[in-house]
Length: 171
Image (cartoon, rainbow, N blue to C red; front, side, top):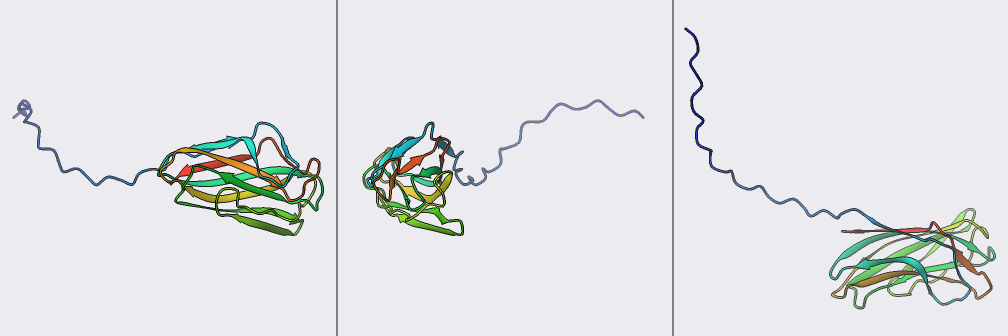
């Protein structure tokens, strides 16, 4: 014979156990881009205006920067560094830049304004320096400011070029 009518819906079953929570995501990277050329004709570190990021207390950041720059001569090197909130738990980076067409050189950044300088630049225009490192912030939130200097004090020693950028990610 023909099939019978569907029966009434039964009660909802009990909820299953909750699964384990996944790892916390690091979020999207934050970029800061230099809007205009900036010159430092001294051997003292100076802020790269507009190249900074807010850092939260007790948070770790992976940082990468690509700085395009001009040098007044191929015998003039560049120094890159940063300053940030007091008492970070760990800060370290490496800066690399071309010294000649076939040679790269670099320095380390172990804390606020501790980076040294390279001793030359590949050309007088369109040089590139890279920074890779991390900032592990302590209890003090604040601003991480990127900075630069020249190896020698001469007019138009180092000019950081517009379009240079830094990227940071929480990890």
